[in-house]
Image 1: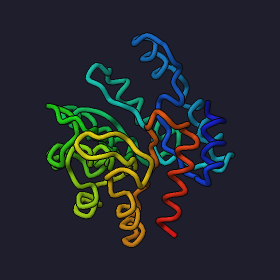
Image 2 (image 1 turned 180 degrees about the horizontal axis):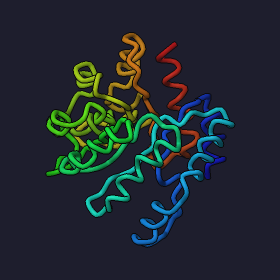
Image 3 (image 1 turned 120 degrees about the vertical axis):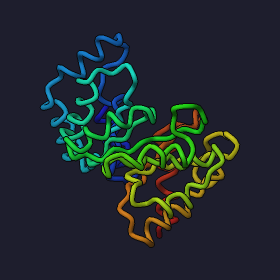
Length: 239
């Protein structure tokens, strides 16, 4: 629940959190039922979530809302409305390049940054490669940018450090996970082949205002303990 998320964040010595729809949406609803829930739930309920986190000493930096091809226009708009109600500055999304022309005017309308999220699978109409990102944003609103998943990017055979150096102005959020290359597994920070240390130091030395969010996915370790371990790694890197 939300209380546990806040407590585990604070216990790890962290004060920023990227909220996902899995944190707020009810589970096990049908497709039609979840659509109705999204559209009809008063925005005041999400404002309550923002206040709950704020009262717990945690800032919601972003909201993760995956735009799908079967979403109605109302569901598209609702993602932005919920993000704004949560007080988040970035809407991160796993979506399709073909949907970016629909997201771009909404980003302008609501004045909310959109971070397009990548995975490591290289498939048509999905985000994985540098060109997938660059082709999608070149004709989009300046508010449409990148939520770079450094671990997935590295696992797919690309260099997230170099990409960040080149395109930091359009990177609105970074997900930190340490994966092995060649579609390798998630590892505790410092044990994979993703240049997490170098990315953190780049953000620090250059002063880039990009939130870098720990994302823990290994299955064999308690996630709360895993995030705490990753947070400790980051603090040691940053001094």
